[in-house]
Image (cartoon, rainbow, N blue to C red; front, side):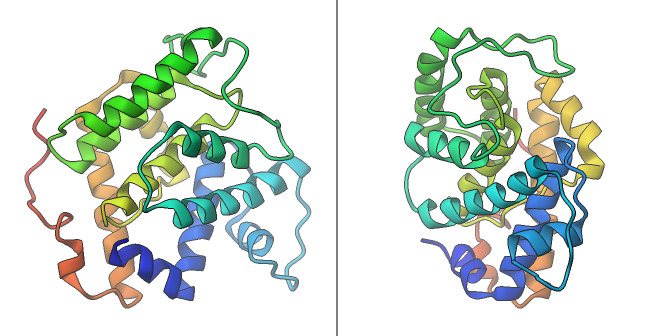
Length: 241
C-alpha cells in the first residue's frame, strides 16, 4: 500500500478535509443542496451545528463517507465487479436499495447515448473490468478518462452511477500512489460536456490538473516526500492519444 493512503489515514486534518470536500462536491454535482458546513457536520457528527436536511440528502452525505471508508480499506486490492457492486450498494443505501446491476433501462441526462439494455449490463461490466485491468495505457490519466467515460456509458446501476464512478477514479489513483481528486461542483458543466462528448484527451488532461491541485493541498498539510509522488512528477508532457 502506498504512502499517500497512509498519509490520508494518519493525518486527521487532511482526512476530514478530503472526505468532506469529496462528499460535498460529488453530491453537489448530482444536485445535493447541503452546504460544506452541513456536509461536515453530518459525516463527522458535529453536534454544535444544526442541520435541517431532506432525508435523501442526509443519506447521500453519510453514504458517500462510508463509501470512501470502504475504498480506503480496499485500495490495495485489484479492481473487481464485487468492489464496484459494493460501492454502488453503499452509495444507494436507504435511498434506492439495490442488489447488483440494474434491472431496468435507463437514460443519461443530457446525453444522446443510450446505455445497454439490463440483460447486457453483466457482460458489459465483465468486459469493463477486464479491459481496465489489461489495457496498456499511455499514463494513469488516460486510463482514468477511459475508465470513467466507459463506466458512465454503461450506467450499471439504477441510481448513483456518477458518484460511484467518481469514487472509482480515486480508488485507481490511490492504488497507484497518486493523490486523489475532487471534481468541483462549480466545474460541473465542463465535466459533463467532456463525458457527453467522450473526450478522452480533454478529460485525461483535466484529471491530471485536478491531481496536481490536490498534490499542493497535501503538501500544505505536511506531505513533503516527493519520492512517493514518483509517477505524478514523471513528466509535464500531456497524454499521447
